[in-house]
Amino acid sequence: MIVKHVSDIAGTDNEVDTRTWDSRRMLVRSDGLGFSLNHTVIKAGTETPIWYKNHVEAVYCIDGEGEIEVEGDRTYPIRPGTLYVLNGHEKHLLRAKSAMTMLCVFDPPLTGKEVHDAEGAYPLAEA
Image (cartoon, rainbow, N blue to C red; front, side, top):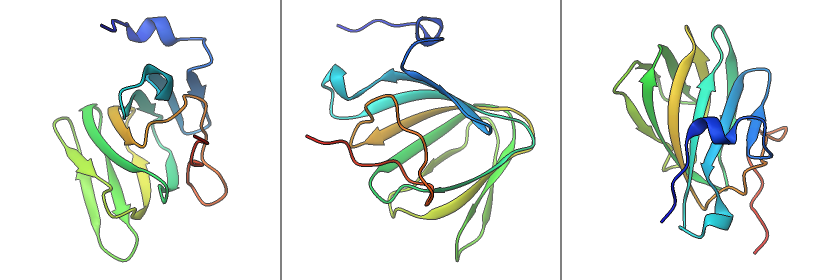
């Protein structure tokens, strides 16, 4: 059994704080579950280009408002209760009108230390 509180992750190697988001990686690859779970706050007034070419991500908005603009498709509003899944490895822009608290599930699981590369992707962890 695994029991953690989001405050346990603050200030550890499993918290990654960038210009546009702060992510506490609650479950990571070393937990051995086959997926990872992040508690992420997207900072108000920011725009982040993302392309998870190596991962599938499911995102559930708990708090805040913004939008996701999918390249070549359309823009979708995000508010509490919104779920979106990037199951087609879609390139997108994530915009936060206010700070947005999100739960993010990744497959394959993250190691806990990833940051976006120049393409907006996370690298694939070595086996």
